[in-house]
Length: 316
Image 1 (tube, rainbow, N blue to C red):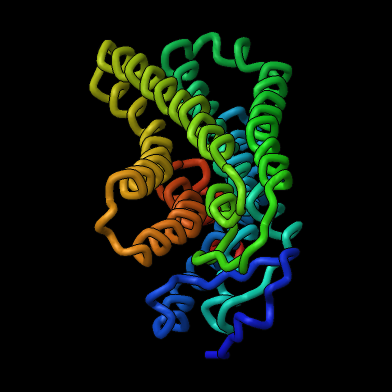
Image 2: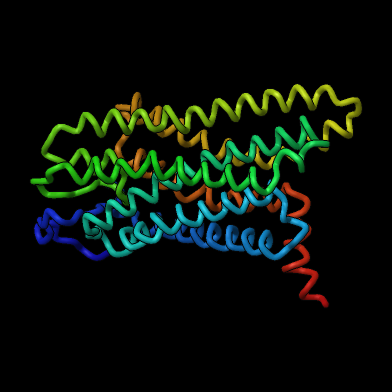
């Protein structure tokens, strides 16, 4: 592994990303599975976007929201993971201050977009199961457009202030970040000024957005389950539950690591810092890779199109 002289970069206009402190000797080996996961995420989400855009039978609200999730996951993967490879395989890396702010913005923006998209998908399933006869009249093209614009606007408006909260801070020490990517509080902690506003804003944003999204998703699925168990036949109940199965799996993959990460940061003071950083990297890398696999396996329409694309065409 390339050695890195930290004293060469005391430029206050740039930062140094160290990787995972304490696991430097394992960086090369850790980078291999991350590279494989990245390729899976890139291929899986690209295939999803291709199928949904090309197949007219998939031009429905459910698959439109799924394409939004896939596009957001591609942004998330490409924002952090390539830089992580260079750190794991080439040693600590320099990143400019504007580059760090850009990475931070798209990282948090992707998380906010993912959360809002999952809420929109829960609303879609709620309408499909609780009001099946009115599905097409409720989720019209105009309504879907408004939902999409709301998701994009909300995510942008709550994350963009973080850029200004960081740009106002003075940095007068060696700017070393013991992480593989730039995130809001991690940058703010390097400032030689009061960062109370950053801390409170960083706390308020998840509470007001991600937590509220999770609560609304829980309410949606409570209503869905009540409607499902009121269905007259076992087959109808099973079919309704199957349509929600993939979405529930994706929700669990997205929110459980996030909640675990928050709890370990708040209460896991005895947990090594290297473990926190490793979990944070897994949280960025794994959901974008698993989401297309889950939908490909559990959604019949997508599974059939994938089989047709990769297997049946080759035999014709």
